[in-house]
Amino acid sequence: MNDYYAVWVHQIKAPIAVMRVMLQQEDTQENRELSAELFRIEQYAEMALYYIRLGEGASDLVIQEYELDDIIRKAVRKYAGQFIRRKIRLVYNGTDVCVVTDEKWLSFIIEQLLSNAVKYTPEGGTVTISVDDKKQLSITDTGIGISPEDLPRIFEKGYTGYNGRLDKKSTGIGLYLCGTAADKLGHRLLARSEPGKGSRFIVDLETYSLQAE
Image (tube, helix red, strand yellow):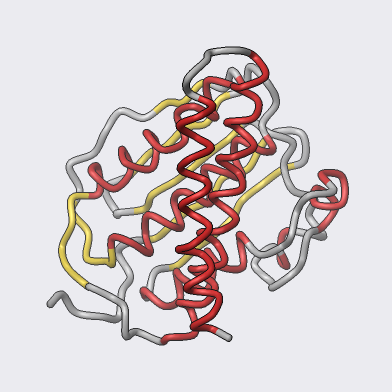
């Protein structure tokens, strides 16, 4: 089954790419909306692939020292269209911090956190990315926040909470994958939130249990 789904994800990328090219041929409001939905489809397909890879242990990890700024900027560029479409301001001033991690999995975590920030931040809101001197990467939004009773359970598999029930489209898989991936890397993933005032997700990159190759 794992082999089948891995092949399926790669196969589905071909028609997605074709549809994207077709939608880019004419710049209309309808095509922009369709492109945004197509972007979501591609993200769900990639999520399925990462779900499969989580069961492979540390076999696909490439632990090295990376420039964190490069990883963050790639994720930001990937979601730039979503921020523009939702009229959400992104604040990031760069960092010169280097971290020992796996680039692919850390990118996945950052992308998922940005995806959630865009999803739950209203138009005109702000998402801020920052890195402190303790190598703590923070993604903070001015969105709807998370209720105190949901906060302890947001990294559980399949748990959607109050926000997920409002959204109707939440699967409860994204944050579960983030938490599991962070554990896989030896990083700590923390969440702070207050309903109506936004959320802050912290990836503690100072902690890791694997050595660079």
